[in-house]
Image (cartoon, rainbow, N blue to C red; front, top):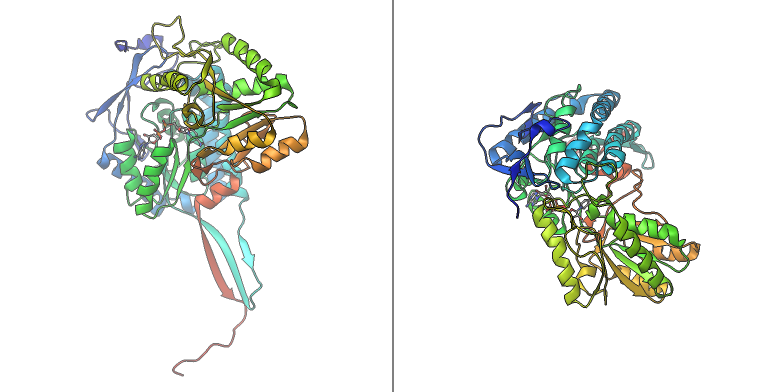
Length: 505
Ligand code: NAD
């Protein structure tokens, strides 16, 4: 490990806070005291900030602010049109600071700035517009079948949401959590990953410059075992929305279960990317490279198990390897960079450890497999690919979460489908084929929440997104988020007097 040097703040393109604190009831918590955790730039290993961890008392203060804003404040009681106006203000203020937010994300998470500014930031803005619209179009139900009654079903906000996110795409993922929670009249406390507090700390501060009432959007910073656990267990929290690893998801679900809190879990993946002999090979190659290497390879929906029809396997691998070698790995602030550094040192070591694990299981290293040469600082890794011997190998079963592709060869589409399904995960699946029945067969038989046919990584926010099996519980979509973040209430009223027993008359 290199010595950590402080960042020269005069070089910062936008201000970076010296200490990332919690943000509670419309105000920043003071920077003094508290347990400190260094925030390191993965590109340069410089100390760019410090996180001041929220302890259980500070978490309780954040929940109290959200509770008060929900129980007594105007937000849940406003007309949906008033809320919509404020949601659109939020979108505007965040997009006015788009370059700053992209910079903070890149400095902290190591994601290529072109990717963050081009995809994550616009998605963040759109999340607020989209869920404002969803809430404003939401309707209830009426039942008239049982005469003489009219039963109406309305949906009411569920209360205070605990929103917990990972480090791999903080802006895109956590903005969706905030937007889908508050759009329906709820209030929230967000806990970003302790590795990437900077962009979301600024987002919550900016949200609080709009007309949103104090206490609707709060943030606590800290590690999972301390701050996160205190948040999930707090009795003032009504609902928990979590995105992160499968092991953490289990712990959170059982903790939330003790309080009988509904929980949505978006967890890991080890998704199959099936390349058939009927694919448009050029597009399948482009899509497969993006599917495994974009976002520095750190994405739950990566196409990390690439399954090749034996007829095209050799030529596909040769082209994939040739292109992998030409991918630009470098400073994530540079416009030309495709892959930046991995998020933190421990994560890079873990990802690289899979090179030996692969070899022990008999895999052949096709390309990469080491730290990227040419950098004496930063967590840069070569785009890596291995050919596995069998789907039972650990590199086929475990989520590696880095620029690390694993290939397998199959002989017919039924075998490809069987391999795809031999996994504890079931988040997404990819298939490349110009033959419709083949594509549809994969779509209908692969057990995953989303299937992408001839496209990588497309999110339709209106449609459900989430995992089968150990990839999660629940879905994100317009309708699913409405159901998750609201309670249904049935009100029944007879439309005429009906004969009633007259006990004691
Ligand atoms: P992680 O599970 O280590 O941490 C996620 C968050 O949970 C962090 O904020 C962490 O502080 C918090 N946390 C940890 N322990 C906790 C506890 N006991 N109680 C409360 N909170 C706790 O995940 P990560 O390493 O930050 O992110 C990578 C993982 O996230 C990968 O497995 C990836 O597949 C998954 N992910 C899933 C999706 C999806 O939509 N399915 C999207 C992105 C990432």
